[in-house]
Image 1 (tube, rainbow, N blue to C red):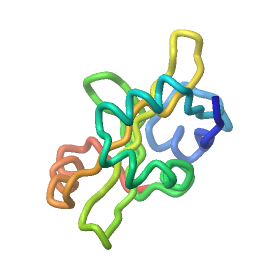
Image 2 (image 1 turned 30 degrees about the vertical axis):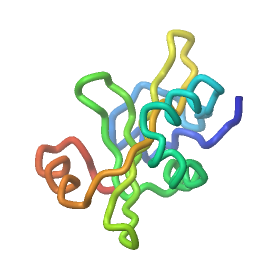
Image 3 (image 1 turned 180 degrees about the vertical axis):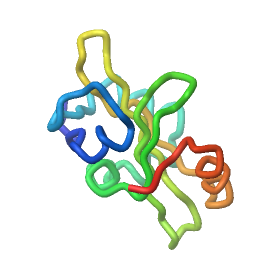
Image 4 (image 1 turned 135 degrees about the horizontal axis):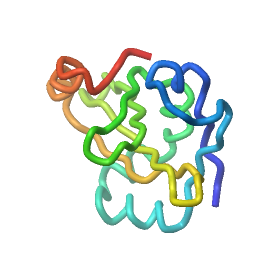
Length: 119
């Protein structure tokens, strides 16, 4: 298990989370397996950016379907944004659960619906 970041005070305040500032975010073997199987091309292209996406996102949000914390970084060079979803386990441990890229047009939809807030 590798530590890939922390949940910052700013993210906690923006999203009104009940989590302690500085809570570690980990990437475990099962998370890597899930990412590489579910989104293989996105994982291959962006996995090395996970710590940077968590540390310096462009947008953050809470997924209304599963309450995961979403960290979003724009990659204009590829015309896409990359989302890293962080979930809290039953044991109150935070894991980077998935990563995937989408085209920038979809980003506006998430912002307009209020699902993502500027960081």
